[in-house]
Length: 105
Image (cartoon, rainbow, N blue to C red; front, top):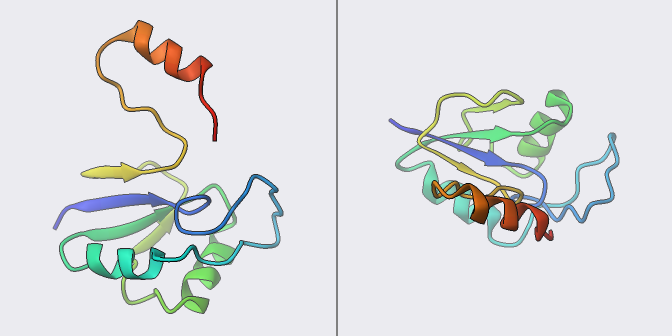
């Protein structure tokens, strides 16, 4: 089964840029169904730089523990990465630079 890495902040929760190391914002609307659907065909791993115990507790509090394989801060080998702060590399460095300089959250 292939693995999909999903970023926590901004993808699965309502993170708005105001970081609090002791609090993970509420789950984003549609995120639970999204993870449930993905877990039917993929190993779902949550990728976050947050404290792993806090992130694991967030997963449990949102009843996702049976759909999520792991929480990691390591970019493990995966089929896809889903993140709100990434740019798809298309082979053209000039276009990538333009995207980087024009990036907005």
